[in-house]
Length: 219
Image (cartoon, rainbow, N blue to C red; front, side):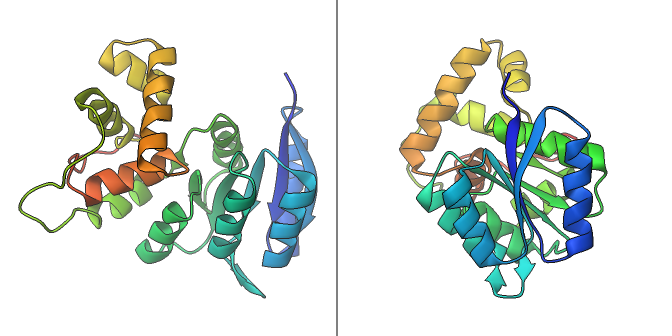
């Protein structure tokens, strides 16, 4: 299996170097570039075509959220994981709307960061449970009746499971269907909603009132 090609972009050189070193300890990863600005992120993602970009939010020349949006616009198959010390709900929500696959605090362990990169490479969302709870709790649409949905009842059931933080395999077990069937449902959901990630799909479904906010997001 080919190594996951990773681009690291963080304006704190010591932190960026640490990420490169950590990822370099596992042959599953290949760090193909490093940068410290929004311009670096956009240009390097275009030139190097990484599988995953590890990206900070606050950089000298702008926002990593804007960089993520441009990266996804130019090459949708590149997955973006935000790794930041900013845990504000508004920033988290903007990141999801920009199409990021994962959002982690810089306080997370090295193992968690590596898992986020692996999950992102598979197109699986990964977000710390307490952040997921914060994000979803602020997205319930303030309407008495849910808006109409283009999704089937089965697709809504899959989305409800994804809102718990489950990956495709866990959804398959919970709903007693094959992983391939789950993947097909997820692809259909993303296509119908015209979104880049499962996080974005879940956030829209909750905002529109199509699914309920989970009481206890999974770890």
